[in-house]
Length: 149
Image (cartoon, rainbow, N blue to C red; front, side, top):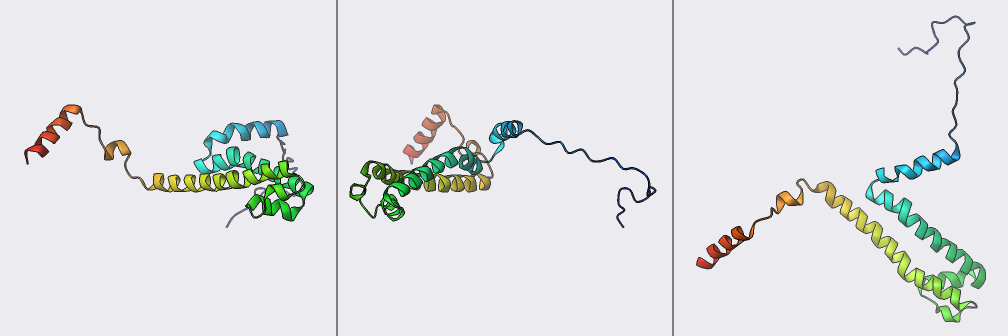
C-alpha cells in the first residue's frame, strides 16, 4: 500500500512550500532551438523547414483571399480558375505558382522522409557490408573467370 509523503508526520508539522521555477521565454526558445538537432528526420523537417514554408503559403492565401475573395483564391490555388481572371492578377499568379509548386513539394518531402525512415529502420546491415568494395585486380580476376566459361 502506498503512503503519502507526510503520512507519519504530526498534523502541525510545517511542510515546505514547493518552489516553482518558471523558465524565461527567451531561455525556453533558446533551449527549443538548440534541441533541433536531436529531432528525427521527419519531425526536424516539419518543424524547421516545412512549417516556415507552409506559414508563408498560408499568409499568401489569406492575403489573396482578402483581396480577390476566398472562393477565387481557392480556385486559383488549385488551378481551377486562371489568375488573370481575378481582380488582382499579380497576387493571384503568386498564389497559383505556390499552389502548383509548394504544396506538392511539401507533400513529396513528407512522403520521402517517411519512406526513407521506414527503409532505414528495416535495414539490418549497413550498405557497405551488403555491397563490399572490391579492388580492380579482384574485378579483373572475376571477369577473366567469367570470360573463360
